[in-house]
Image (cartoon, rainbow, N blue to C red; front, side, top):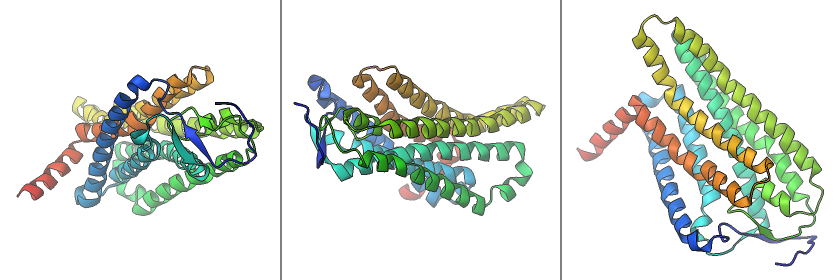
Amino acid sequence: MSSSNQTTIEGFRLKGFSYVPELQILISLLVIFIYLLSLGGNLIVLLLVCLDVHLHTPMYFFLSNLSVIDIVSSTTTLHRIFFMTQYHMISYSACLAQVYIFCSLVSSETSVLAAMSYDRYVAICRPLHYHIIMSRILCALLATVTWGFAFIEMIPVVVLISRFTCYISKEIDHYFCDALPIRDITCSDTSVLDFYVLTFGTMNVFILLLLTIIPYAFIITCVLRVRSSGGRRKAFYTCSSHIMVVVIFYSSIILQYIVTISGSSMGSNKIFSLLNTAVVPMLNPLIYSLKNKHVKSALRRKLKKLLL
């Protein structure tokens, strides 16, 4: 397609995986399968937390927030792959909305994981004060700040992208609209956007990663003081699901960041994007359901009620 400067643009063409046409149908079917697993798993977790009174605790409140993030994030980014043959058109406003929602949800997830780490710290290190500290008011406040800050933080990103006045191409080499692929096709000055993403994006991930790790440093200290090996195993088992989710989530982000700054092919970037938008949301409910006896017990209770 010939390059041309555009003062106004009505929409973009998403390239998706059209560079490997022989695998495109297979990729689409695989993504649909993963998406349905992700949607089903997260909906089950969300419904169990809402319907089972035994799961009306701060930990599962934040887990339900994580499930909402995974459902909305995967639906927002993956639904166009289902219908892609070669190229798929997306309107300019829908593209900006997709950038805003996806980036905000990634930021929300980092905050929710940090809140869950703090919850585990209080539960293990200050168990007698757990219900006083992790009150409904504090949980509601943490959730409000988490969602509010994430969606406010990403407003400048969308505003800066909306000010791009020319594009060298209408083709976005991705399967959904993201800030960096759009930046790659604009001929407008991107220095302010680059500075904002590098500064605030990196600071946000780094600070929230620290806020996620620090509680576990205190948890390890507390657990090592426990004399019985059974007590230590129980404490570590309580945290194991969350630790696995944190490791998978941040590993996928860091790997994608390394791929992006190393100048690797866009194909590699799309693979790591699929890891973030499809595989991670699918794994989260599986990890929490398989590793958590309370979730499994709640599921058994609901199944008994349905079958009897």
